[in-house]
Length: 259
Ligand code: MLT
Image 1 (cartoon, rainbow, N blue to C red):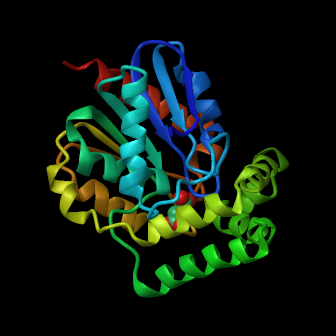
Image 2: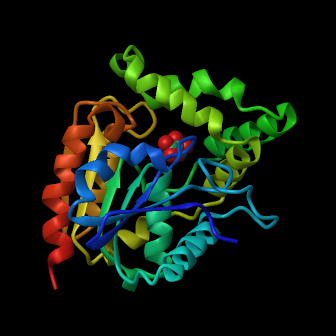
């Protein structure tokens, strides 16, 4: 079974990986900006966006990354630039661990390399149980909005309302899968020194989930990394869509055109 895959534009392929409680539509602005010159591939995590329910097997990000590679194979797509935000960044690390030869450039936004400490891991497992017990994601909508967006963005209906809508489109099974998979993810810090492709790392000054210091540590650990900090919260590409699209355009086009 493959997840939903959205395939827009022509040119060198770029794979977009969305954040927790969102879906591929998180990248609409970036796809509109890039799809004249690049083939933009977006995947919805199980139970999010248009993807079917999670399969009945152990929830892991490495397992989903294998499925993403299968989805690329199904479209005869070889090497890609990978853009991941937060959970999408955790998935990007999983892809690098499994198939570095498939990656020609990396963009890591508002994400971290480390695994969870015990407290946050327990919180994830508690949320997974809660949405399954309630058979609804409603109780997580406002708490997630408050964490995902800066105060300024929370006051902007054109930003916050679509975020609420995307959270509500996730199924309880999709939320539970993502939380259990993130809780089980390995520490990717030792991978950083092995990342040999051009890499752009983006942080948000007001990120309430992953502080700049943790994002900067990624850039410090990767030999060919460029670091950019933007004045926004966790969902940088939704709060400052043009700034992120411009960063991607100026980074990805030269990076993906390199031999
Ligand atoms: C995300 O935005 O993908 C998540 O908040 C990341 C996380 O929970 O660690």
